[in-house]
Length: 326
Image (cartoon, rainbow, N blue to C red):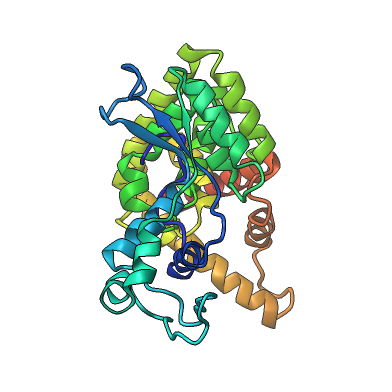
């Protein structure tokens, strides 16, 4: 179920999954599942040599499998509409099988509506996934991940770098790593910071896919620089609690000498401590002894995707690091 265009799994909470089971047991309609059907002929898309691949419905299938396997139980307020007097809240599939066999059997026999999609064109499957999810709260990163062309694949490869799997400490379930990866590749593609709002990133993915050589060069440069960043930051580094700092730290560290990498984390820790102390002063002591440059950095940090914010935050870091390193 792990096609490249798919949202990552395990996004639904246990309550969300149980609510789907509630719908099935009470006979409500469940939205169609869309499967890529590889049983008719060999396909270059069938990299795992399986008969089907999920296009849309991954979260629903995970919920059903989890109920079967006992990791999800019915919500405590579950009501079986055919017989509301039955107290079934909190029960597992095994409980139903042992004590309410007819209800478990109804679950076993529930017919999911499945649409079979036969195509050898990945861009058509990607387009179908995006269209099916337009009315759902997909993140910008998830939509871009399903776009056609080579850019989404390059972004995916960058997001798999050790920097994202080992160093960052922000959540990545909704594609935050894909989003950060897209931003730093965007910087490399143009050779300087850029605006990183959703519209800009979407436009970049479409445009970059038309210049594969330039895109691949940007990807290689990004990967190499992330190798350096992985040596700078610690595992699950507290400096990387927010995805918004990644493009700024990336471009700042990219601009300094390699021999300075050994002191850059110490500088960033001190910088963040000074920012915190400066905010406390500003709240309690008015304007006396306040570092206005740090307040300006805080202000810029509220608009993390603006071009000016990227440029000025990198400039402030570079200026203060120059003094720190001298």
